[in-house]
Amino acid sequence: MTKHADDELLPPTPEQTEYLRRQQNQYAKLSVTLRGENATTLVANVAEQTVLKTTVSKDEFDAECRRIFGFYIPEVEKGRLRPYHKAFITRNQSRTPSGRYKILEQLRKYDLSGVSGFETRFNREPKELTEAKLREIEQAVGVDE
Image 1 (cartoon, rainbow, N blue to C red):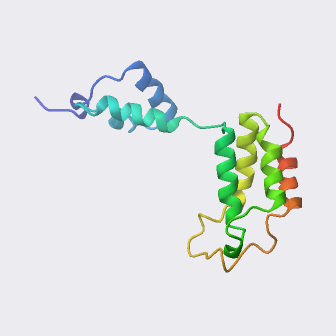
Image 2 (tube, rainbow, N blue to C red):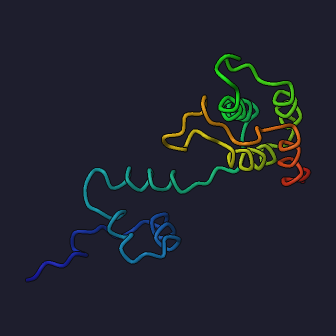
């Protein structure tokens, strides 16, 4: 009797079936229905990774804004935020969690941390994150619903 690949696989659970349907990949079944101890943890890990975060807490918002603004502040100023940076954070902390998320998504376009080989202390964006640019970000997102 010949052995088939499907003989090595467990039948998918309803959760796995839903996950496989969303993947729209005929080979995804191989990653979630393997026999063995790791099968359930593998599915749980994949399911956790597919959940998209669309909200941000006030503390997360504050920390992420400060991190991004920090790249635009010269070292000699020791990371002290400019008054308009503080005002931006204060104005937008009162938004809804999803509103804060939308603001952060716009602000991340100016995040310099992912640029490799870029020395932020020597070379900055031609125009810093000015108050006018921060207002543009707020206008682009609009008011909370």
